[in-house]
Length: 130
Image 1 (cartoon, rainbow, N blue to C red):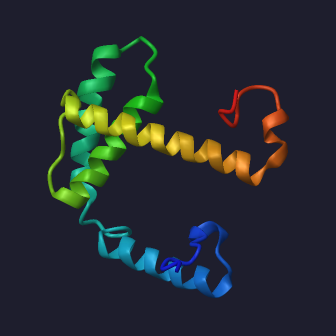
Image 2 (image 1 turned 180 degrees about the horizontal axis):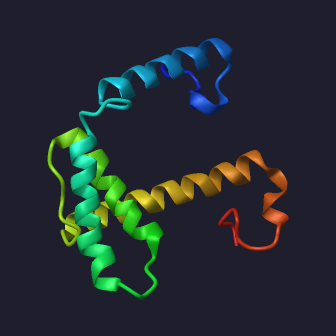
């Protein structure tokens, strides 16, 4: 017996389910502070920490923005959930962010190969199958 019906997610769901999931997602996001100024102080604090840790030491040199912004975003979301932020040098935090990034990257690759059958034949390694 299948207790869980096939869940398509917000992007691929049919109309009645899509509307219900969209309403729920927006309700939760608004309840957690989206569109309100209550989270603004923590975002401004994170910007200050980001500048101190990533920008100031590397003035005049290129930085890899994708990695550093990933840590800042994880800290903002984490502070919404737990009420505190983690230091960028915390090894457990760094490992968690990298593991989450790898999971998202592999999910995107699997989604591309599943939803675009010809993607495996395009140049490069879009699907991660090579």
